[in-house]
Length: 243
Length: 243
DNA sequence: CGGTGTGTTGACTCAGCTCAAGCGTTGTGG
DNA sequence: CCACAACGCTTGAGCTGAGTCAACACACCG
Image 1 (cartoon, each protein chain N blue to C red):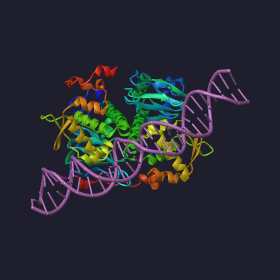
Image 2: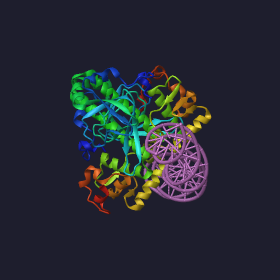
Image 3: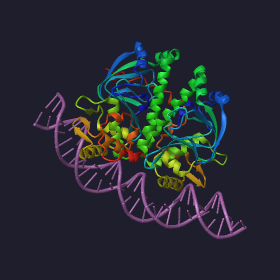
Image 4: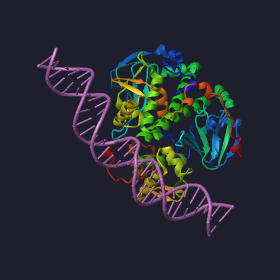
């Protein structure tokens, strides 16, 4: 995901340097697992950056149906674009955060072009991620969704030394992120393990055959990986279509 | 949608005044129906604003599955956030556009805070719309999707004098926007007509019972802005339902 | 007029959902 | 240190909402 920015394993956010400018205003908070960071319709007087742990941003429908529209991982900022507090942000497990007053952030952004540019770039990146996720939700099969998810998380989290991906969130959260049920998710994982694409090791998942996962995810392998090749051929427009 | 900015019927874009600043660079283009405005991987040297007609922004999967991630209506700007040209933009029917060189737009935005703020606000608005659409795609039933779509379009297009909504796009485009098939869409519309919520009049759709449509869409009545306008058919205790 | 494109309808299928049971792990209190 | 409750995950057995495929009914149009 977002491979055009030359995404590097273990990089934590788009531009940590720029976000570090906020540190002067920051204060630390810890939130227990399944507790809310903020709630729909709260006053939006601050925003946060994850230090350790994981936050899910959730939308509830009237009848209890739920959608997780983002997982926030260490280094990532949230609570700024969702200024209208349409969603609820909950800690997945015990999570530590840095909290910044909105006013201060906005004031600094006004006087600091690097920061405002960085925040703008972040917003655009989120928008791209959202569009990408929309195709996933609407047109991909369950297996494709799960494979995509594993690859996304592998990119964003990075694996521990034993080469296994350790997911901070539970099956129900993942399912609600992918728009499927936890049962379907579980079946898809089992099937992938049976095929040898992954190895399930309670709590951890080893991505054993990345190539196969990319195929399952519906990515063409050539499309992935190197941004270089991708931006190589800027085809000229379409003039024919313009009358 | 985006009702927090005091959305008014027939308002065409977020902030027409600000976008009008671009006019000095604009040149007019016409695109025939089903022709591309830009294509995935094109050079992104300009952006557009719809004058008349309608543009769909589309993503194609390898096997022909398709997702429409936005309809662009008169007054709306596009081609700026999709600078990476991940998508293809196609005219739904014959469409006229104003075309602005990206460089010029970006340069002006740098020196004109009102413009850059306006563009930033637009991006955030799109992000909110994307999040809202993600729940729709992942957790709503076909009927809910269709009802939501009709209400969204009614908001954005406004009806002609005969009180009927005239949709610029065909059933296949709508279906791909909602993540369903055109057959399912058609059945949902027929069913709504049978129930009296809408009246299908070849090409046009009259939203006959807005209250019922909001219910079908799964919106809570109080949540909607324009509550005043809808002379209520209180078919059941709304107040009771809210508390 | 036939021809083509767009929408509707019907019959059937199936991917994914629901409900329910089983099974490790983890935590807790005696 | 063990029993047992609670929880998260997996598995099984149907069920069903939406998809597929195919026919049909119209406009609209040269």
